Amino acid sequence: MVCHPDSVHARAGEPMTHEPPSDQRTEAALRAAEGLLRQLFPAALRFTPAEVQFLTLQAGIWAMTAEASTQQRRLPQLLGTQLNTMRRAQPVPKTAGLPHLAPGDLQGIRKRCEALGQPWTLKHPVRDQVTQTSYRIYPALLSQVRASQHPGDVTSNYDLQITLALVYLGLPALRIRVNSLLRLRYHASPHDRSARQHPDAAPVAAVLAEHDLPWRGRTTLRRPTTQVAMRVTTALADALKAAPPTDLRCTIADLHTTLLALYLTDAELRAQIGALLAMRRKA
Image 1 (cartoon, rainbow, N blue to C red):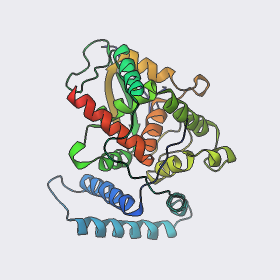
Image 2: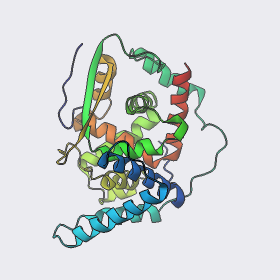
Image 3: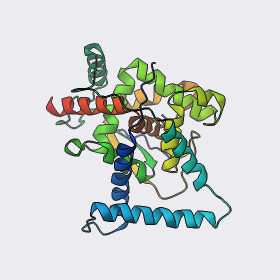
């Protein structure tokens, strides 16, 4: 097996951003909080919804109390970013059935997948020309991603992230959209004019800030992290490294965190990924 070891940050359209309504945001936040509580307490311990809500509120009060007594005062900035995002939120349009994905788009994604030697069906593991791509991340973001999935369709981090990567490689419009975000992350503050004018920048920056992940590209994470390791074909690993703008020398970590943050902020993209995962399960 050929291995490409990675450090903390390994190298690597039309806007569709919609913010969920307030009750959906609250539900998603509480699901993410429950995931974090399960990491803090013994695995066998279970919480009622009321307990999750109370413990989350109490933890927030303790965090704000500690923040108010220090000189760093990072919490107001993080909460302010989240508040601004909520106040700018637009309601998610109601759609019936599966999200629209043009047959040509689906065919393009599948053809790119097969050309890279990656199995389209989730039933078959990668067997030929296998390598491992990995990056480190704070686990809270992965917990929120897991909580955002429909309870009956929760899938592994691996399958979800590979599907996101395949859509990024197979759909030029999404690749342009993500690459423009990557360029901002490497060259602009989220408060710069260019970032303020980008429809995805503020929501993505808010998701990253909420989980204490840096907006600035190629920044080392300072707190305990979890490592996400994915077995993929060497062709797919090479394609992911080559897809972002070459002048950025983009890391695998920054590419995946951008994709995951966009997945959380865009209800339509989230539904499309869910539909593709269902197709890959049935293939």
